[in-house]
Length: 54
Image (cartoon, rainbow, N blue to C red; front, side, top):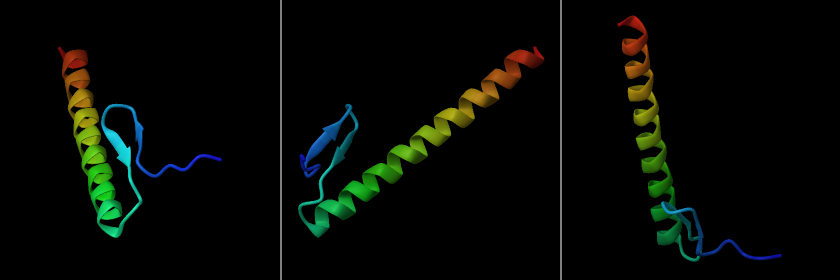
């Protein structure tokens, strides 16, 4: 079984659970990526509705 400490998943997500500071940084990074994705999806939905209305 392999450890996930310091593993990189894709280009934007790194999971590092070696130290408390690493855990906090990883948590903040995941939250930021989730917020960016949510905003992107919201913007896409708005554009899609505008195109359908046109």
